Image (cartoon, rainbow, N blue to C red; front, side, top):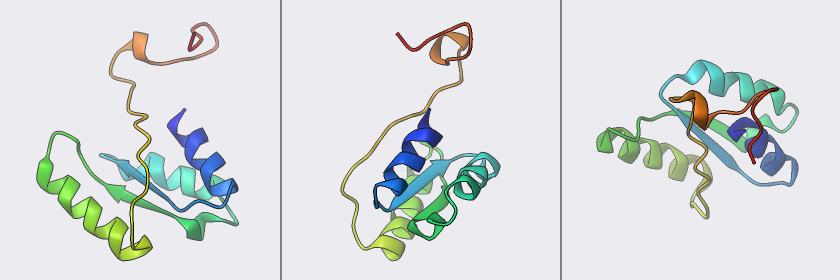
Length: 90
């Protein structure tokens, strides 16, 4: 769901930073954003590691100059926290 939100925001003209512990899925989302992928950046970060968040913030500020919003779309650790064909959000 977070990837779809990121793609929609880029489609509306927003700059987007995708933070993830594993950059492979984030890179895939950047590929889906073509030709607007230049408005996005994938950054390695772990919310349990404050230093990685400080480093991610620096990367984002260096690229975009400011941060306006945060969309927390973390999930997947529990089957009940995910969605799929047989499990809807609502």
